Image (cartoon, rainbow, N blue to C red; front, side):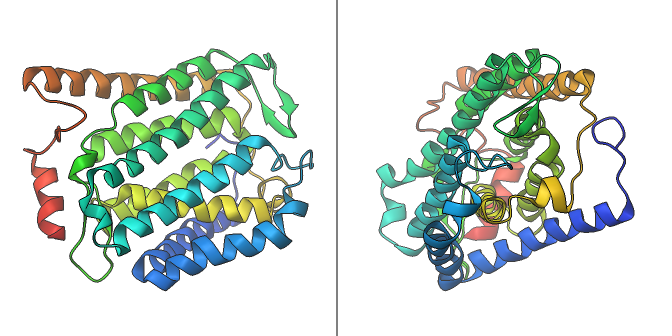
Length: 311
């Protein structure tokens, strides 16, 4: 880890693993029952909004949780969790095409917010690194590269009219056209975003948080990546808003602050998302598909397996 992060001990890795498995466990609690989701994503944040966050996430606080971005990201993530629950538990809603536009819109909004933040970090001109809004960052071409990768990630969102609710007990929101290629491109982009803009927190909000939704997608409930992502993101950001000292004081794992590392991480992100965009648009033109209506990967093996597992 010496290339991306400063030396980590076994205790550091133990804390990291605890964060990873705690996020996965609470995600399972939130998706397994309706009341589990209501408690985690409505009742708990309502209490925290009134009694805790005005203090722990006050504007200008020493941990940087009081910025506009943190507040917007918190409520947009929670809006996604509650909106997806509405689709899951109100049977008539998931049958309406206009309602199926909500998942891609809230996803695109979250990606766009982060892309704007990357561009904003470039505008700070912190070419040698500096603390801005009480968070360390280093401005550079990587911000532009990864901001563009985020925009490419938005335009490659596809197949949302094929979203359906699984027939099993958990009633998960299944998006079969969101296959592994898009998920990996997203993960690479989002990790680069956290590395660029929340550098010294990215060991947790980058690596641990992304794995906490990617692992369940491949090994626990396939096809439900966006649901896993919204819930783990909501859980993490509520924790950060409540215990802002965690990544700075309690269990800090700073990056190496190396410009080459920033550049390489964002270059990989940009190349992955550019490759995905080229592949998808080639597939769209070749098969004369409508990206706003058709499912691009409907004929693939992975698509068919996700549908078969959830009908």
